[in-house]
Image 1: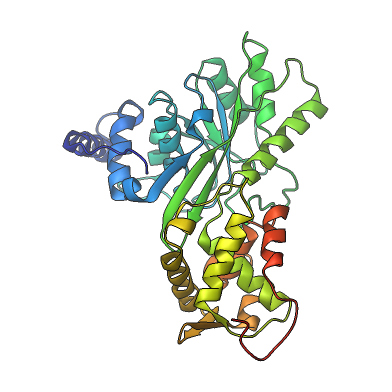
Image 2: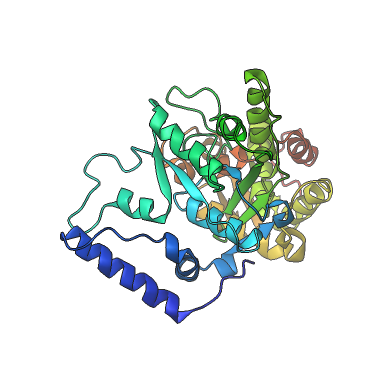
Length: 376
């Protein structure tokens, strides 16, 4: 788990900044910044969000310890910048505080309040705005200048937070990933060294409310790269992000139940059979990132996931046998922020559908026949 320290001084430091900010909103003094107290932010936010127990970092050796760097991640939750920023700081040897690329209409109209403005607060933390539909040269220039000045930033090539669980959910007229190579190509013209684009992925387990941040190997753009080479680099970054999703028990169980319903296998399944199938799938994925808890405490992982899915009305469990609700499991809810709650199984399955070896491993444990009796 992440090494998040405890420091009372950090709470006092942030309290002082918020007092200054409150005075600024009342017209007294200038707007403060959190950038000089990012370590304090890490301590306080980390304690509030329980990162010591709930955040795990893998592949940290791939995170550079010097700047500039363009970090590229999937986007699944509102707190992604904070969680990922903390992982970058810790993995870089406590040397890199990233800036964040944030769309300029995130909060929508009426966002400002009397005593605070959410956009303003995030800007104080390092967010810089960019339009998703009508980007301007001045918005792009900010991030190019960061790299030229030896600073790093975090961006989301998917351009928007995923609602369905898909690693990259292109919607609202967006048909291709945002291009980290554009910023790198512009900045490298005035630098002697190549600028790394580092893919990383956040996997969130909704059953245990835990997060894994996984770093991939840096990707470099050749000097003088043309548009074709830039696009190839952008696609390589997106592909690398997808490969970094960590498989957990919730993914495997959701995949098993979904495929059973899809193939018309509606018979009840015993908890012991489900546990064995989870291990069988995990064992066949030796080359893929797996949550260690799958093997460390299989029985707990299975029972906790079944309880979570039963609460989500995806199945029922009676006397150590579970029976899925096919109509619920196969339903396609509206593609909005309620998707995960409306169909937690599809939301989990969508996170792994792009991994062919995972799909094959899941298919291998599904009996392709229909029977009214248990297959245990």
